[in-house]
Image (cartoon, rainbow, N blue to C red; front, side, top):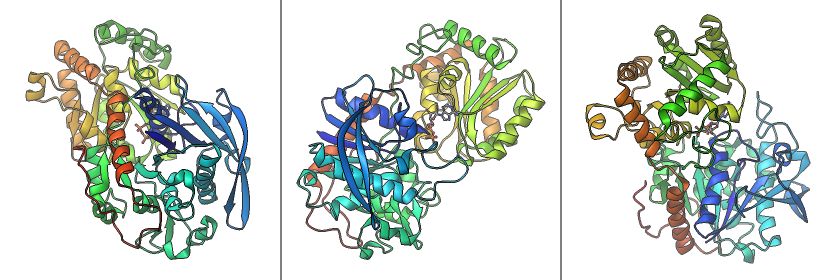
Length: 511
Ligand code: ADP
């Protein structure tokens, strides 16, 4: 297959969350399976300064943004460890900024112009680069207008004629909502601004645009694919998603075994695998305790959490049980950045529990690996979690996850109960109700099992031996690409309001 993969972030160019891990790894896995993939990213300051090989192709695009004609240059790089070309759309006015989407406090007020420019620039660049994709794989709201443009302003471009579109939802909490007046920036006809197409409660909604116009839709776990068809996780788009449920699939993200395996990570105090996990983790734990200024005690359970300090990640539940947890003989390490109220909470915990609690408020990729390797348990009580990567990284490191059974967490962690402990399938601890009591009872279950070192080791090894590599997920994506290229409608006319893509689809068994 010939695939163009469009994302607003990708490792190692620019990252704020899991989307970047996916965009950095899936194209490589696809290439590995013999497909031709090209990746497009915005030419952020961070991406250009990432220290990667970068050449100016000398090619440019000109994109109408309202009444302006905005120029972009095409820079070329490569996904490390592959031949996958990465094209950065360089437009300093839009992308030469510190942040990707905002300044850390508020979103940039020209995000609609920035990303509609990016979306059109990709479609302008495809013929110039002589690409002929069968599928354009779009990701999240930032790329949501691409399926619309493909069916409207760009439907007669020969290089795009064979291209169907897939939109993958990485997080439906972010819709890309803008003033209706921004329709004038898009160059799209106002007749598309209606409740069945681009309009959402009076606003222009990039995510909805993609959900209506893409040939197929996917999200990053089967459970989340079901959850977003109902309120509240559907974010108001649950009706549309139910309407398109035959076209909606759930494919769990993979992990990059080179990047996230304790056998390969160069930053660890000791590398280890499932055979050597006892010694290896003990060494990594001692290093972590030392680095964090915690007592170097092997026998104390070391809990960790890494991620955005956002209500989504269950921080209010964690805040409610923090004192109870610290009342036990445990240690806790947190790496994260986000909402000021959680910064305050973590600073307060550090003050109250010196030598047992450590928080690093910032973004530190190397430390994230070291925490995954050194910790014993990983707390992930998310209110919702489209897929979640940290529980997968935890499993790979023999760090037992405690998760709320939602989205991808429900699909990837097997709760340790009498049956699963006996049959050897248990990998972590799960709870359902989003309450502090449910979280606390689950933490207590984990603490009860902790002294049983044989059972604990089995739990660690089962998690470490599970296959969450990208090869498995990439195969599922290829099946979607094949469906798209078989069935995407001809580009003669935009779909009418409310028109569903009608041909039956072979179910993949993943949604
Ligand atoms: P989300 O995409 O919702 O933020 P995921 O669990 O899917 O959550 O992915 C988060 C990714 O970002 C993981 O790779 C995680 O290690 C990384 N990450 C999040 N916060 C930090 C941080 N403060 N420092 C380093 N890595 C982080």
